[in-house]
Length: 534
Image (cartoon, rainbow, N blue to C red; front, top):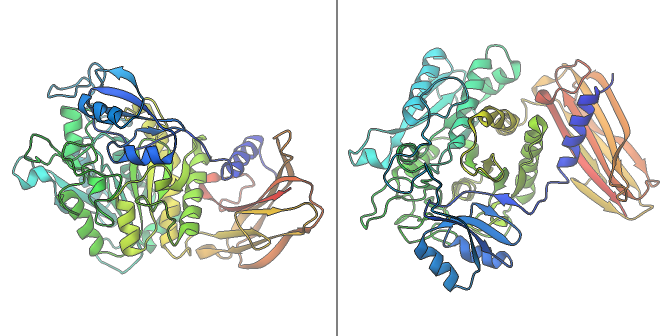
C-alpha cells in the first residue's frame, strides 16, 4: 500500500500546517461603513487595544490596522496621536452607498448554486428542507427581530434542528452552529446553510453522517441578524449592526458585543453611533435574547459561530489576554479544525485566542464558554484580505467545502468521541511539540480508540518528516501504510532512540475509513506531534 504522489503532497502540506500557522497579517470583523477607508499606524498591542474601543478593525497588521471611519472619528483618532493614511476617499466605492440609495451590488434572485441568500430565500429553503426530510429536520421560530417587535417588518430568527427522531427530545448531545451576527458578512449565512443541506442530503447514503445525526442533535441558526442583513442588501452594503432605532438619529447595536459575559468592557463602545455599540445593557437586543433563550433550554456541548473575514479559528477569551482554564484543549481543537480546513483547498486559517488579535467584550464565544464552560469558536471565513466582505459568489462553495470537515469534527467532539476513531501520538508523553538537546532520548508512542468503528477495516498511516532547518526542506523519513481492523490500542512505541540528528521532526499517525489504499482526507482522523532536536 502506497501514497499517490498527489496524496503525499497534500498530506505533507497538512502535516506542516499545524506548526507553520503563525502570520502577521490577519483580517477580521469589520467596521460600519463611513466615508474613508484608512490605515491607522500602530506601534504595538496597546495601540491596537486603544483603537479597539473606537473601531472594529477590518485587518490587523504588524504596523497598522485597516478600517473605515467618519470624518469626526478620524479627527478623534488623530487627536490621540495616531498617524492615519487615507486609502480611499468616499468609501464605500461607487455603487455601494453609505446613505439611503439602493446600491448596485444587491443579492441576485434565488437561482443556481453559488448565489447568496436573502432572508426570504433562506426562509423558503429551510422550510423546503423540512418538507423534504420531515423525519430528521424541523424548523423552529426562536424569536423576533427588532423591526418585527416594532411592527416595521415580519422577520423571525429561524433555527433548523437535525436529528434522527426530530420531534422528540432524546437527551442526546447537542451542538449549535450560527451565522450572520454582522449584517454584511453574507458568506457566514451560506456555510451553516450548506452544513444543514449536506447532513440532510447525505443521511441515507453516508454512514458517517447517519451516525452523527443518529447520535445527537445539530442545531443551525444561519441568520441571527435578518433586519441588518436585509438592510445591507437593499440600502447599505457595508452595514454591520442590527436595525434598532437608538432614538438619537443613529441606528443599530452590534449583536456580537451584546452578550452577557463581561459585557461593557474593552473593545466595545457606549456610543450608539459607533459600529461596535454594545447596547444599553446585556441582551438588550431581541436577536441575542433569542440565542440566549434557545441555549438556556438546551444542552449544547459546543458552539460555532461564523463570521467574515480573515480566515481565522478563534476561541475564548476575547475580553482579556489571560488564557482560559481550558486553553490547551481549546487551542488543540482550533488547531485541528484549521488543519482540516487547509486539507481541502490549501487555504490557511490561523487558530488563536481571540484577544491575541484585539480585545473585545460581550462576544458570543465568551458568553458560551464563560457561562456554560462549553468549547466555543468563531471561524472568520474567506477572504483573508481584499475584497473584504464582498467575497465573490464563485467562492461560496469552496468556502463551504473547506469548512465542512471542521464542522463535522466539532459535531463528533460533542458525541463523546465515540463516533469517530481517535488516534493519539505523543513524544515523551508530550504533545504537540517536544524540544530536546542533541543526544536526548525520544520515545514516540501511538494509540487508538476506535470509537464506534471497532472491528471495521481502515487504512492506517504512520509518517515521519524531517527538516534540517538549514535547507528548510521537508524530507519523508518513513511512510508506512497498511490496512487493519480498528481495535483499541494501548500505547505502542513507534520510535525510541537518542540518535536523532539536529532538526525538526513531525510524527503523524492517521486512520481513514475507506480502506482503499490511498489517503482519503474526508474520512481521515489523525494526530501529530513535533520534535525539535537542537
